[in-house]
Image (tube, helix red, strand yellow):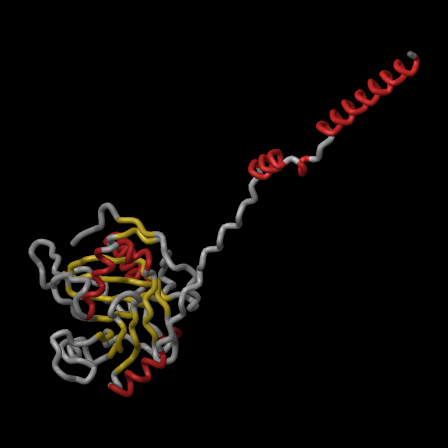
Length: 278
């Protein structure tokens, strides 16, 4: 009988030990051993992927070699004009006056569209010898067609704000210097606004800058002062005010960057709700 009681006691003790061991296993289990707990822990604190850095690199444009080729074709070549995403990529000439190259091309053959030419009062050698306002003239097709020839392509600026945002730079280089210019105004005007002054006084220059801003189709976040040099591209426009079609112009103005470091692919542009008209 005593042996039977002893056996029962041993069995009871063994059972109690098994229960204690099983309980300790549940409370002391490491999180890694529980796949459900592990999954919840990882999902509650996900690792953040680093945001890719914006590519600010802008392709450099070098035009001096093209100018040399232009001079070989016509010694009146004084520069080269290139505007990305347009067909404007050609020599710029200079005649003894502003009529000489109106209707002849780089080979001095008759062409209704003429060629690109600077105002005869401009001096184009390098950045240190530029006039305050370097002016380039060119014909358009009078239909304000952005797909037309020559400076008709400037109407891309006038008709498409996204084009302005995505094409902030104009490249007009001199024989001894690659130059980069940033657009700050796009406007229509009657020629009564004398924007084609190459050597304006400081007061006259400030007036030109103020008027360009007021007339611009866009508000463009590019600061310009009378200490800057500007580039003025001018062409005829089919738009008109008070029926004056023949004397109306589209003008794109850009300022010379102090160095050729172009660090942004786009620029801040808004529609001007009330551009000045004349």
